[in-house]
Amino acid sequence: MDSVYFDNAATTAVDERVMEEMLPYFNRHFGNADSPHQLGRASKVAIEDARELIAELIGAEPSEVIFTSGGTESDNTALKGVVAATRKTEVITSPVEHHAVIHPAESLKMQGVKVIYLEPGRDGIIHPEQVAEAITEDTAIVSLMHVNNELGSVNPIKEIAEICHERRVPFHSDTVQSVGKIPVNVKELGMDALSISGHKIYGPKGVGVLYVKNGTPWIPWLQGGSQERRRRGGTSNVTGIVGLASALRFAVDEMNDHQKHFEVLRKEMLEGLSLHFEGRYQINGPKTGGVPHILNIGFITPDQKGLDGEMLLLNLDIDGICVSNGSACTSGATEPSHVLKGIGVPDEIANSSIRISFGKQNTVEEVRLFVDKLEKILDRMMAAAI
Ligand code: PMP
Image (tube, rainbow, N blue to C red):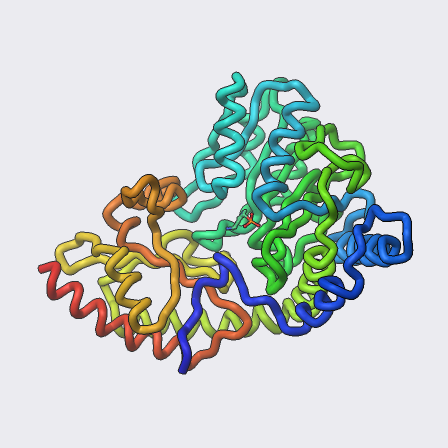
């Protein structure tokens, strides 16, 4: 067996069918979509077809779909763009958002904007009442993610959107980890802006969507050419856009099958964990109600201490297993994940945590192999830790 890839929330392999649809746009239909000749027109048509398809898949109007370079750009644009247009001075978000939201929020803070971080529970969820309480006349935007990339928790987006609408505040949601995985329809859920990334759904990297509901106040962030109706300058990434639309179509069409498959993998994993590691692990984030393909586990020694998560990851890697960990290496030092910190996981356990994220290609055999290898590694590490 080749390596086992359980890091699908970080990125996914491009689906072969998607690649095939992209290929002609590298060197046959390579025209600049803004060129007035036939090659340019062919690219333009491909982009507009992709826009229509994506709009249909998320319940939007084509004019509300703006192509970007990915989730990070979409998140940055939504926050900074709405604050700039409304000239209001408050942003409401949470400490467990992706850095693509937290860092622009922090940079707005430096410009005098007040950032309110709503506190999630241990399950990572923000409740609508917290939003209702925090909104003031100065609130420019509320930005709360749909599915958390580290915990798999699912925020009650529809209820949060309703409150934002009642109070006439634009609501942005980072849906990078939910679109194509669970149903996302902007009309049903009611968000005013959302972010999508191609590479989380078996599409290419470096391409994404910012959906902005018509009528929402915002100012474009990347200025330059007149692409995307002057809302995002830069020569259009035709190949990427074609790939993103194709990937989203497959993801939505096959969503039910994938969900069922992930439930099976999760059940196998949870059974394996409780059988082999009883009392030596904890689940970080929601115990129920989260998405089935993301699981965050912290390991605990018999004397209730954490383990060296870096070492755990390295050992798994040596055995051909790719997962991600509960810490990030910032300026050479290992820092516990801000998300685990944000839900109150002690630093020691956060540093001893791993995130397993399944993809459609994973199998039950891989889960069994993982549990088997993990048991040997943990036995070794725990013996050394005593
Ligand atoms: N938001 C979330 C929730 C993510 O998981 C990611 C990717 N890790 C991003 C935003 C950033 O997306 P991209 O890599 O396309 O910039």
